[in-house]
Length: 110
Length: 110
DNA sequence: GGACTCCATAACATCCTTGTTATGGATGGC
DNA sequence: GCCATCCATAACAAGGATGTTATGGAGTCC
Image 1 (cartoon, rainbow over the protein chains, first blue to last red):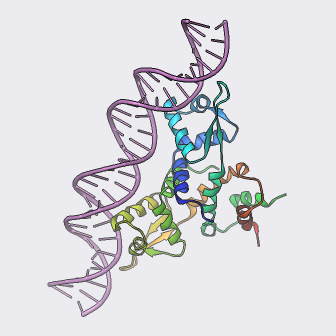
Image 2 (cartoon, rainbow over the protein chains, first blue to last red; image 1 turned 45 degrees about the vertical axis):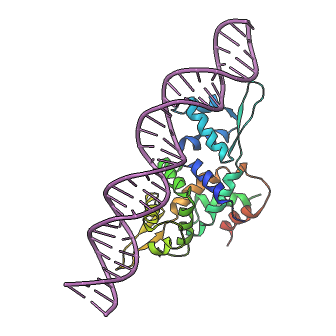
Image 3 (tube, chains in turn brown, blue, green, purple; image 1 turned 120 degrees about the vertical axis):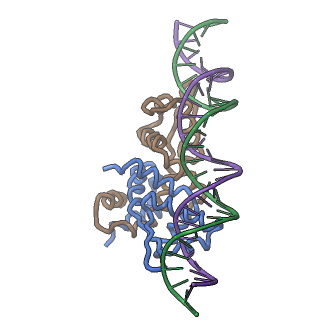
């Protein structure tokens, strides 16, 4: 039932860098090329390419090739595994009904 | 609204190591001494002490001192911030109603 | 074919992380 | 006072992470 620990290692490590989280947030808006992902980041293109390798290793990103367009695509399933682990601690958060509670409750909404 | 990026760096980095996740899971069952936390782990006591320093730096653990008993206590609030970030991707998980959906929905239950 | 763009990889430097062993401080029991 | 236990810290080694510049491959356009 519990996710593969090594997988969680890779996912949490991937999320531990702000540039990589920025990449994931950008990919949540749709696939993008490496060039597009690198543009807003204050690092060189090879650095972004290696961040993508880390994300790919965590199963969070897949890189395709369609002609000259090589899109990076988000695969959020490993994020779900990470969330499963974290949600196990929800009883230790503040118990008041607040923004996150509302957000979580949306899953149950129509 | 969004959590401090540097805080998220520290939290996700803290979660990226299986020993530290094991420590958090243990502390979810109640406070414990460093000795108790180190016992089931295959590393030395100083290694555990430094894992605790990492967790403390992420705001996930506080170390007290009551006489000769120095308890480590879980503070799960930073985990909530991490979950907030992750839940932003829930639309990209499999959409079928399943175990995690049920788990998240519990937050809204009486 | 030639030039251009997009991207990966190599080679390198630097800092961080994780582990070890050794050691000493603080506290409690005798 | 003296010893034992619990724990932090120092000092060190080894490997990983992150960045750079340089370079070359693959595909497109003229």
